[in-house]
Image 1 (cartoon, rainbow, N blue to C red):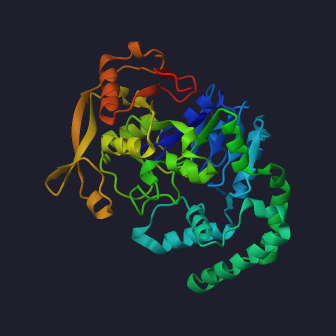
Image 2: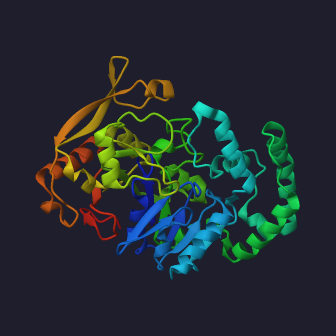
Image 3: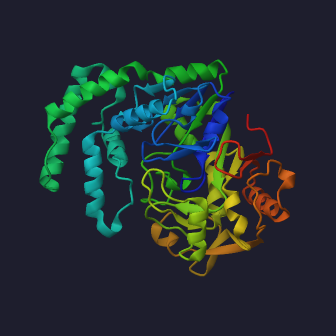
Length: 427
């Protein structure tokens, strides 16, 4: 059994990209299983930063075949731009493959995403306006176009004409905007077909054979548990399932292979976009976390909302994903705080609770119940042994393990792939 999964335990931006990059050198395959270019994964190697939006974070490792899986929605323009940028920087991308079942983000998806978000006004979701939601919506209403459709271009054009007849009516009659031209799009996607076709494969068959042959396969998610379409703070969520369960439908593999499920947790909390955020700090502490942690969106550049660690959120992620291990990131950012609060429960209408309500109205009334830890106030970025960590830092780490009932196997103390303390082997 050789399947490994990396998922986020909070609202995204936990540092999954770095962890995938660290593990990729020991993998035969790295597979992205959901989401699209609304993700932003930052990988730092020898001080050089690479930001990936759509490509799997394992692309920087030549050892692993990187696969964009069936559950991903693919903006071909963004994909080709990322490939060109990596090539320009002297990096290889000939180990990339794309599932024929992945859906294509079309220009009208991006247009409609922006129009719909604008129309919502004060009730906007806070999407990245990359067309992710509209593309997934078309997938489930069965008018989407898939990557594999490009291989039979006459069929692709038939599907495009059908979709445009629906989308152009919405764009013109509901929003009063200019319609998309069929011939123009068809010609654009003929060039895209020529560029992508050599990479298009039956990814489900490939990955199942790899698992059956006991190859090392790493499944990489985007976003995180609190943005899951089912279990996140709905409707302020993404349009797919970034949980370990999303691997099963997003790649088409059996649960029996997923016995190494690694959750990434940031030592504090951040969130991008709208929605409730119980531990948010709209004060000097929040500003300090943002600046010390460089908390600005890799995809949008937006400043992230910052707050203290919410262990109710992390524990829920451990339960839903069946985590075997946690990876703790950015604990070095906390080194300059005298006191560090951690949320261990909520007050809701005068009653103490330790689970997350399903409604936004209830979540907005939550008041955090904090346990306070003494800080350590010393630089830990160069430490590579757990025993060398300050006592108060170890107390913080051990409490997270105890509260979530999940061991912390790797502690990241800096952005580079080498800035790690390994306490248990993940592979």
